[in-house]
Image (cartoon, rainbow, N blue to C red; front, side, top):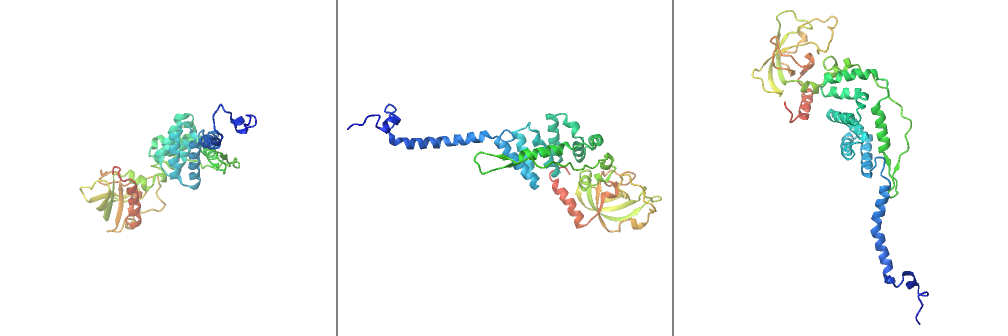
Length: 345
């Protein structure tokens, strides 16, 4: 007996005109589901593009902020440089590059971050006088740094823009990943931020030539024409020796650490008793031979210029430019030399 179309479920459901045998329906449906699954997942991800308009950017921002929290500033700096390439108009990432570079003492990168911010929003230049002034100071650009630091004093009690923007960056970047496909949840707003106190910066207290701020081995290395190891022989003077009129100390070079080998091994040094940063003569100070080195002792001398003045060569910041030659001091200099390899010596 022939069944009617009405009584034949397979024919009535799929129809003869479509010509699809019932036995192929299930495999075909499964293949369609498999083909459409990736598209469905992509649609779910595009639904949530994170705080920075892109899943890729938001995830990298999370990685950078997490590295900052862990103190891995090298990794954070690399991520923020990448993020700036991906999203060059997002100001948050320049603040991230600024902070990570400050922590690494890489002042060229600090300057890059600030100067790019100034291009994006010129008003930042007035708001970041303190930060830019300190950056210029560390780059030995003292004439540019000093007026900015003076301006910063006028607004020293105002909230820090950098700290506020870093708080925003961390809040927006740190995301909590739940075990839900394609869904990213943000952390809740943290507790109210308490502004830390900021110390007043006096420009005179950070002046390279009038304060102890400039007395670092890094500065002594970069601003010295020559650095030598020399043996002290004796001293001489053509008159009264005083705190501000020191004797001539005769040294003989035994090795050099920076610069060209001098033709003359004898080095007459103006043997200062102060660091030339505006010190006053100590009460009761009088010269005696015990204030001079022991004959035959060895010293590391930082020489600004090999050109003698009044027959004597000056050392970097006077007495600061003399270091007793020992293993610890030698290692400190060699570490700086290692960091500057490949640069002009």
